[in-house]
Image (cartoon, rainbow, N blue to C red; front, top):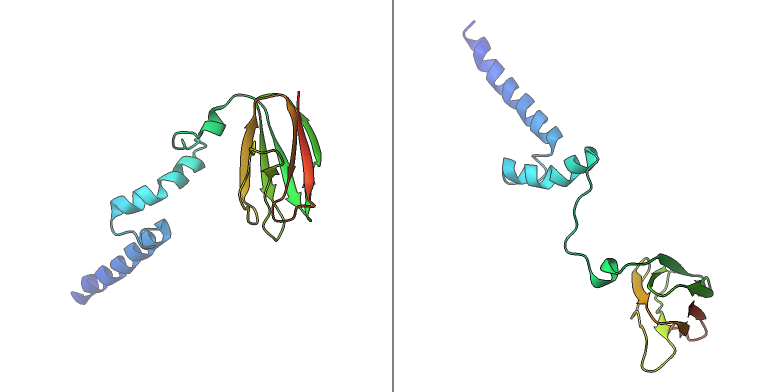
Length: 148
């Protein structure tokens, strides 16, 4: 009968290890505090709380509407877009090859640089006018933003 308590300690230890593994503590965190820090965003999301992001960038702080131009199959969609001043336009490349959204005027009103697949670029149009643009990698890809 004295051996029975000795057997329960290893079984209890294995059970505790399995419990901690299920909670994520064995996934590489060095301490219980590290496990709590790593899991904090998940628990906040589970409770329906929105996580605060770091200080917003200038384009996020600007007031106004926003819209999206999709780059896919070597086209800008929509090819012609009319917006109000203060609108943020975001280009997203859904194509399998790199593209740019580059203003046709010099000096360039905007230039996304090379956008790989699923990368985005945003620009806020503040001044009325017609803004022709193209893909610097594929110059036959053209489109226009009209701000009025």
